Amino acid sequence: MAAAEDMKAPSTTWLESVVGLFIKPTRLQIAALCYRMTVSGVEVLLLTSREKGRWILPKGWPELELEAHETALLEAYEEAGVRGNADRQPYAKFASYKGLEKGLQIRTTVLAFRIEVTEILEDYPEKGQRQVEWMSIDEAIQRADEQGVKRLLKKFKKDMARSRIAA
Image (cartoon, rainbow, N blue to C red; front, side, top):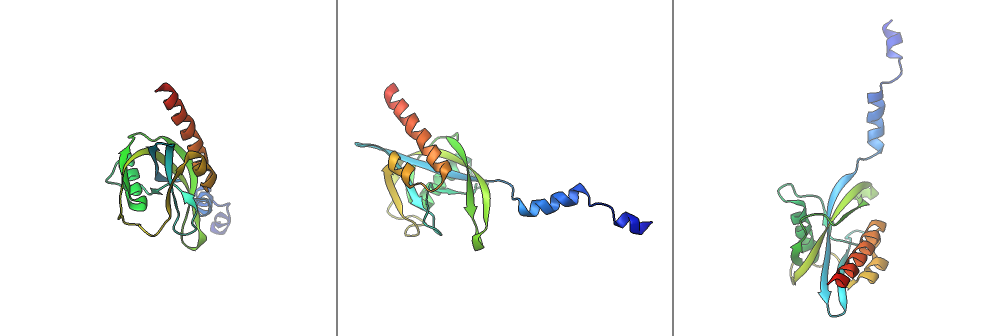
């Protein structure tokens, strides 16, 4: 009788465990949508990823001791050497992938916080590890390598145009 019981179909829990090895749950990252006002209009900051040189926003994993908007400020400082005023509420969210060692990728949900930049620093933790550039929103839309960032920048462009009309 024991042999017959050993031959039963695997439990749902066991199957779910196996599936869980291959389908990673979404992870949360925090991004900084850094912008500044210039005489020629609004500029946004993009930088390259360290591994593949893709044009992205400053972003990273949440810091447990910081609020989410403070994490966005920290990422902007560490990766791009900028400081400013961050909105306390997320501006938008988008789906992305985080590349890990040996080519592995995990899905992430990215919360983006707008940061109006007030200071550009000469020295910062990741200086020299990435290219950092200010550009028009249209150029940033063209250069951004992630569809989620492109959509975010298109939304930002519309919102900035609306706010100028209202002003």
